[in-house]
Image (cartoon, rainbow, N blue to C red; front, side, top):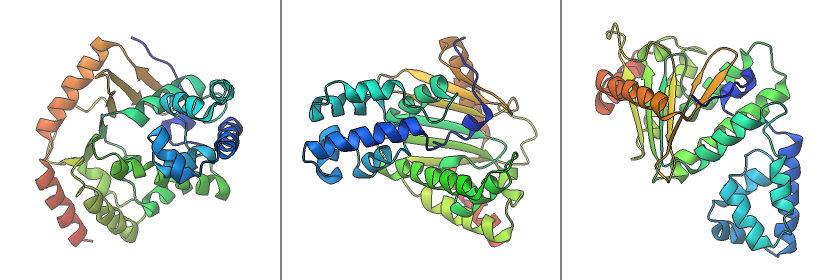
Length: 281
């Protein structure tokens, strides 16, 4: 198995603003301006959204490798961007695992997520995410909470901006029944998810509490498919995470996820259950 261990901070899978990312963003911005491009005129050239260019230049989003390669060529950056990219990281001590997964996620053509602890970050409402950040141990400062919240909301843009990417989510019913943050936060959360899952590329299935046993009892699963049809995965724990590229291990996770899809409620029934929970609040 090919895997690596990461720190607890990386488990959120959200970008922390860091000096190296800000430095890369500043270098990129300088070369872009030198070439006479605005973010709007430049974005089509690198084949990314203007919002993505802005996030990268602000140090809030990790630059995919293909972005860097295109930027080098378009901006004639003398190798400066590639050199800065080598040292870019979400935060100190996180580099190897998180950089690789971030690159893959940015280009993925399908993402599959099973969660039994909380609502996945890509589906969280602002109030729900804020509740989680405020409850984190060790405690975060107010500025750290705001930075995490901005990053999480920014990351959710990929759901709408990448209509050709298939997003599949399987979430335990009890995650919603817990009413994290209270009734108002839960109501906002369900409304948000009902809206998001109207997108044709976003599918949510709930694992009902009446299902006493299923294929996901070993914990959360995330699977990702690249444009080259390679599959990667990661699994999380309290203080560590495993990046998995071994085909045999991924095959096992695929079998488990496929079984989970058959055991969970269909998307239409899942929406109906969410609507009933919303009405009972």
